[in-house]
Image (cartoon, rainbow, N blue to C red; front, side):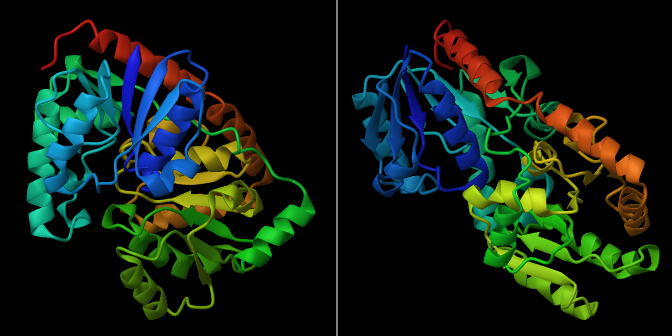
Length: 370
């Protein structure tokens, strides 16, 4: 089996995490992979004797590059192409497997500010959904969303959960924790959130809850909001300042992947108030590092976190405050969540995701292209 894998979007955090971890597993699969990627990203990609890197120096979102990329794929004589997003080339002569992580722009149009981008996204999504031989998505809630918002027949979709990378485990070395606190100017105790500053992340509610939390705790707990300072970042920062929380909320910016496990481990609690997630990997990563989690009870998060997180209604700041205060003041609950989190996160290895994805490839090769 000679598989083409589109890694042009490896730089994007969600798709990049997914792609990089699958490729790490595929390296020992015994199959041949042709990895289409941008030249400057080749050094960041896993390598193996069965991997061939092919330069594909086009932005995957650029419509004008679709034809050139299709021609490159055809020239590479792959048996099938896996595109880990909706941005697949059209009219391929080999089977197409596409991973649709979520359909957030259909559910929360504000996640794409530009109306033209919304139109392009929907058009591209529909084209990929129509032409793919097989579809992969990452949770049952994403499968439901594909059916409800895009009319996809669930029989054409395989749900394959994401995994937790082996780098995420409890870091207990005090020197390492002190170094990462210094590197990102983090306090000794803090609540942690990490992600993209987007509307569905519900950070306004998190900030609102933080104004009420001091009434429930013996001492203040700083909040660390980490991620690239783009998207809704300025709006969130203004909300922090409007509520007088400038001294209580820390914005360290992007956390390097190599430091993320230590930051999770240093955190007192991880908080994730999203209104919608296609999967929600950060809570599982935090659990794998031994950090208790407080997450919203919406979308995929109950499916992913199971009984290992304290859940709350993401439209209720009072429930958020109650959940956090309970976790921080009940030592038995805190330790129980910590232990349950370690067990829950261990149920999501990338090796399993890769094995199930290889099964999809085999199935796609038995079906003529759509």
